[in-house]
Image (cartoon, rainbow, N blue to C red; front, side):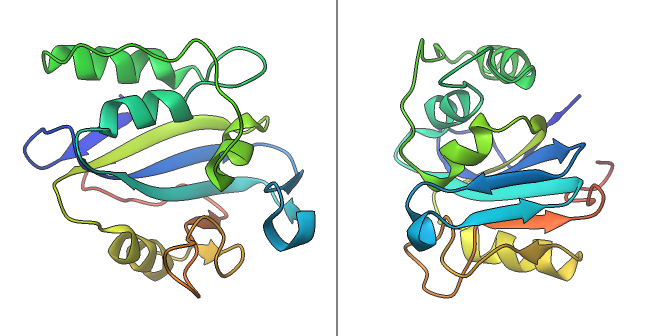
Length: 167
């Protein structure tokens, strides 16, 4: 199972997306740093985000949908997870690239795992620090973290990190 949940299920919370990068990847994040191209080595890329006010299921299904090409394989498992909780959800039929995460999710990197942290409080800073403590490196200050100057919601690690016990 690649969807890992912590806390009492609710439609709000923070999350970490883990993408498997099998080959080097050159990627820009829209207009971030003037369209700078980042070169990522094989390993794992982590994106930290949150969706409050009941938007968690739709946000995650959106992330798992590609604007061009088939969705991430994990989208079906996410959908089953939410439906298993009795939630009526529907993945988007299409999406446009808007957030920094969209550019990452559109890349050839495949969504390998989703970590859900149910709750009403924003936890991106805490999760970023936890990833750093486990050895992940931020790609650039401000990337994906416009709300936190100096923070980065996109991090890289050479191998999968144990984010939850048993993961």
